[in-house]
Length: 306
Length: 143
Image (cartoon, rainbow over all chains, first blue to last red; front, side, top):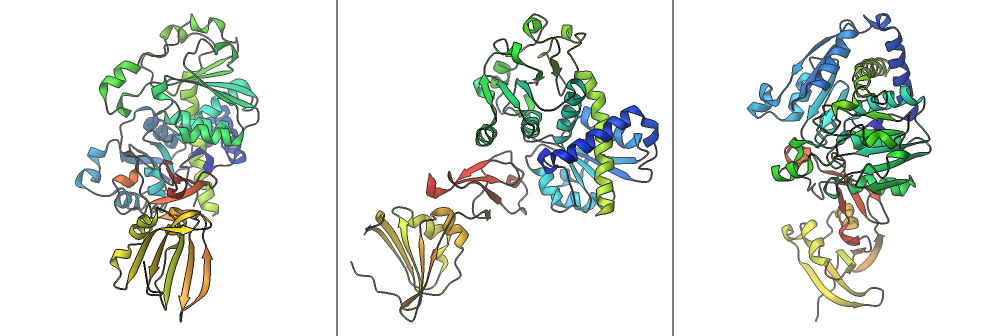
């Protein structure tokens, strides 16, 4: 059975197929309106999320399917002490596919070992967030017309930023991609990721200011410093305002650079940037719904044909 | 110092000096009823100093554990007083319930029923990665 736990679970060709389907769905949503009628998506959110959960639910409803689930661990049997594995086994008897978010890293992988239906990782702690990555890839491909031969800047919390980890994993499979990792020393990308880049001979640089690299970037991926990932609030307060993108900093950027952000933002992108044609983070949100539609449909088709 | 040769059993030779106790612990040799000899700091032409463990019984050994602790160990199987087999070890591709993930954010820290799976990611550097959270552990042998 196929799941999406880590973006590299899908080959580059499989990702392209999902993105192609998402493009077709954007072009003609009504053609897919009833394509999953009678199918059920379970959204198991052991950690609060608005955007991702609603995006999954909207995706399934747009395909004519139904949705059930919970939006916090307090309202699940976890509060009674049930193990994750038992919860997954139970819910997979009630649904055709599961999207789950969990604060512990590796929880969706653990769930996939016991599930009777495909599992989609909707975010596991600071580890991975592959459907955000599909959204990011789709947005970059639609904006730039390609996913290869470009310089991608990642800025902010690169240590706990799971969207960053997944996107690096995905983009590093395309030829000619060069990463610029912009973060304070305390929030650098985990060593297992930089070592993997080194091992594969993929060029990357780690810097501490965005100004010094702005003119080189084709894509700037901004992230929020996530309060919920810190054990110590003092560290969060010290680091939260390290990077704020504003029109002044964008002065030296390429005219066709794309600014992405997985959202929600706090204040790392000034609202004055929102009307800049290079800001595509709200387009990204729209793409997220369509790419999740394409993913759910693809996984269910694979399951039927297995 | 005199330690009797064993008649039927296992001799773990060429253990890197100082690692013998790790081998003893990981293989849970303290739980065996048979005689077990742990000899430290023996002179060795090949590696300078070595530890040796002699187990006076034909037990099932977890070679993955041994390979993880020290892939340089030679396992000699003794029967009727003669060495009938010498096994060479290497770092295993996968470790199940040999080491534990130390990442406090890993799902294995709260789901007690989960086995601890580690996958070998870099043989040269002896780096293993938790199958669930990707946290790294280095082979004891290569630290």
